[in-house]
Amino acid sequence: MKIFQINTVCGSGSTGRIAVDLAHMLEEHGDECCIAFSRGTKPEDVDCFQFGNKAEIYWHGIMTRLTDRQGMYSKGATRELIEKIKKYQPDIIHLHNIHGYYLNIQLLFEFLREYNKPVVWTLHDCWSYTGHCSHYTCVECNRWQKECYKCPLKKDYPGSILLDHSTQNYRTKKQLFTSLVKLHLVTPSEWLKNEVEKSFFMDIPCTAIPNGIEIEKFVYRENNLKNTLGISNKKVILGVANVWTEQKGINDFIQLAELLDETYQLVMIGVDEQRKKRLPANIIALDRTKNIEELIDYYSMADIYFNSSIEETMGMTTGEAICCGTPVVAYRSTAVPESVGDGCGVVLEPHDTEGVARAFAEIISRQEKYKNACLAYRQRFDKKISNEAYYKLYCSML
Image 1: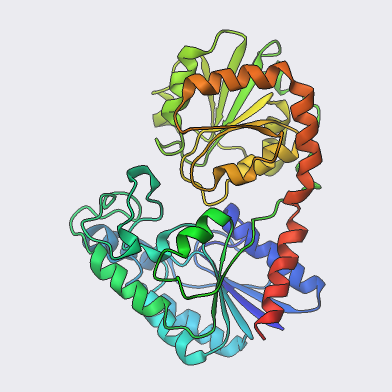
Image 2: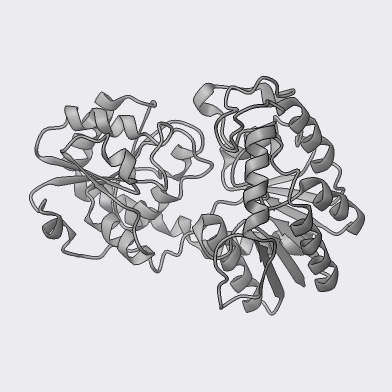
């Protein structure tokens, strides 16, 4: 069996790591896999193919900003990709993120329809079935269920500063994406699967396969981070994000900084220099971690992990924290609650910061009970379970 994966990146970011994990799993089964990608660096331990160039990516980004036609440029890069697929002759093509200013969706899907081999498409966000946005919960928009128009998130990724082509984009996507006879969708959560079934994908088979975690790595371990940060006598509340936006909950952390007494210490990871200036002095704001090992140390240091996001298609950080034995407080929004196992934490309505503060006190008062529940639940995140679910899906499509 030969699988050809397509993603924005390879080996980096959550989607890039998922693609590499699947490649390793296929190799262990004695099968072949190639990962085609456009951005970032090329890993050495997998068969991969980097296509396109920075100039074409920048041009795609600029034209998207002007025309709101993400996915309609990068023709040269897409033709290069198609030639590689023809040469490789895969049995199954597995799509991941096809947005990111690197692919022409019309050229790609016209080829896939002609190639007529099974296609697995893992939807890591909501972009595939909307006329513009990758998430819409923050504005409570459901126009995508019928047809997008006058997008309220036009300036959000993939942002357009001039035109609104959300209706045209929606129609183009619907026509192209539903034209494949042998398409099977995968979502990382039941929440996203339910959303997909309300979209123009409603007649396409869809399976929920949660993103797996390398549970052998994500384990609790003692460290001296509290001493290093000068907070050895504090109860640490940790938050992690790639970019701290309002949707990720930066304002909730600011409110909590006023609500909590001095026995607590808020620590935020992934804060850029501009946003650091917005935060009060009693929040420790740190850059992104350099590697997974450093991130595991922070999860282990924390007494509670607070997932303040209201827009997640799974919420990997929640699972990673639980695997390290750290109880979670999270919001009842999108897929976030699905990762919080019984007894592993507290789930509240979005932006109820006073309720969050009470939940912190409740968990601290019964810390050992919550920690033990996390350690008992962690096996459910094992990436081997997810990888095998994908393998069974591949086999069923041949």
